[in-house]
Each structure stands twice: as structure tokens, then as C-alpha cells.
Image (cartoon, rainbow, N blue to C red; front, side, top):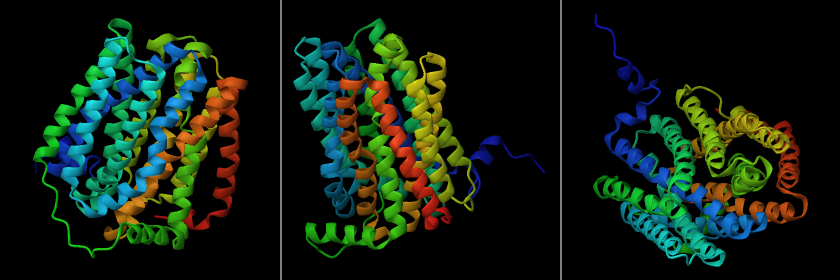
Length: 414
């Protein structure tokens, strides 16, 4: 009897760590998004450094973060209706092309020395709007391209590629800013969309079943009604909203920590962001290795609590290496909570309404962050970034403790 190759074990149906990659369509989709996400993280780091260079103000970091993220609060739900109505390929091609053009516009403005914080804010808002319309279809597409039993693994692998790009992208951005200039990051981001557009053009999505021709209002109402009457799903979305509003704005404040708190410069900013991405990558690998019978409810509650604890300790740290370690813990913990909630929604919610419920997950994850960014940016202008972020994460830690003690239905989730 011949020994099985390690690759066979990793891709094996049922228990392989990377089993979802045996589906060809998902594999090429995964690869194209990985390349594109590296460019997106390069732009995120460069944009924050550009804003801080122009203004030297944590308040403006919060404003630009608000502008980029608030569309998720405004447009995720329409995006969910589109995800349940429209063809995946056409929508994804349209939104990704728009984001490529916005990145190119920002690159040209910086090259011509015409970039102002007001123009950056407008471009950030347009990019956020495009992302909000794209996200529910993107998440639903993951389920379209794999078998049902591979859904959790596919979501975990998607988290791995996203967070691996969080390691590579910020590190490349820091080196690019130091070695070339800020504009180069935006040009490279625009270029990174080309492989993804090629992949989307050739990916075969399954045919969609005809649905009743309801109005947009009826479709939205149906999604809200489902979540409102399903306490378990509602609690899961509330947990994601708490993580988003009171914890995730730490990413917006990172240039301020790098420049004025830890004094590590643009390279250090890349390393700090990369550390968070590395931790998130490990969190994704852990999810990918989980057996289907493992209980996911306790993991959501523990991970969210650990996330806020790590952010609170990060605010107290003045040592770069310790700060990087705490950011790695926070990165892993946020994946353990948010990605696991995503997998629970993907498996618990019926297919015909999945896009709309996922849009509420997207709204909770991305849409509440701008409110937190604006709040923490304003407080940071008065108290300083460490105190503002510590107050926010400490408050959220109390909220999570209350949910963990009272949400019995979440603790029982498989």
C-alpha cells in the first residue's frame, strides 16, 4: 500500500485543511482575490500615511476612515438584494473595474501633487460605496463555488488569503513608500485588479433559480423579518457590530500610533499592520483545520472577548515588539469571531435569502466601523489615540462579557 502524499491529505474531502481548493472554480477565484487584496492593503496603508502627512491630524484619519466605511452602512442592504437577484459575474466585474479606476485616479493625483485631504475623502467614499455593493455578492459567490460540506473550509481559506494579503500588502507598502513614493502604492493597487478581472471573466458561476418578482422593498423587508424573528442570527450580527464599532477603528488609528506613539515611521507602520495580518492568517488556518463537528458558538464569544482584551493592552504598550505581538493576537481573534459568524450564517440561513442576511453581516462588520472611526478620531484629537481607543475597547469588553453570560443559544451553536 502506497503512502498518501501530504497534498492529498490537505485537499482530501471531509477532513483536509485545504479541501475547498480541490474545486477548480473556487481555486482560481481564491488566487485572483489574493493578488487583488495585496494591492488593496498597500493602498490602505499608503492612504493613511498620505492623510497624516498632509494634515498630521488623527481627526482627519477618522474622517477619511468614516468616508470609506460609511457606505457599508448605507448600501450593504441594497447590495444584498442585488446578490439575490443579479448574476454574480456581471456585478463583480463592474465593481472591481470601478475600484481599479479609483485607485488609478488617486495615483495620478498624487503624482501631479494635486492630492488634497478633501479629494482623498471623496475617492475613499466612492471606493467604499463600490465595496459595499460588491461585498454580499462576493461572500455569496464563495458558497456558489464549493459543495455545501466545504463551506466552512472555503470561508476559512478565504480568510487565510485575505489575511495573508494583510501581511504581504502592508509590508510591501512600507518598503515602497520608503524606497519609492506613496503614488507607487496606488499604481500597484490598480495593477493588482488585472488578474482578478481575468479570473472573473473565466469563472463559471452556477445558474440561478428564477425568483418571484418582488419589489426591492419587499425583498429588504423579508430579510429584516427573517433576522428579527431569528434571535440566534440577530445575536450573531450584534456581536459583529460590537467588534466593528468599538474595535476595528484601531486600523484607522494605526498611522497615528506608528508616527506619534511608537515612533517607528512608515516601515514600522507596515510591520504593525503586517503583524495584525499575520495573526489573522493564523486564525484563518485554525478555522480551516477545525473539524465540522466542533462547536462554533463558544469560539465566537471567546474570540471577540480576546480581541478587545488585546486591543486594550495594545493601547498601554510603548514597545514596538510587544505592540506587534498584541496586534497579532487581535488579528487572530477578530477572524475567530467574525469569520466564524460568517460560516454560521452561510450554513444556517436558507439559500434563497442568504445574500440579504449576509448583507446584514457585511453592514455590521463594515458599516459600524465608520461610526467608531469618527468617534475615536474625535476623542483622539482631545485625549490622544491610546486613551480614546482604550476607552472604546474597554466599554466593548463589558458588553461582550454580558452577552457571553446571557446568550445561551449562541454558546450551543455547532
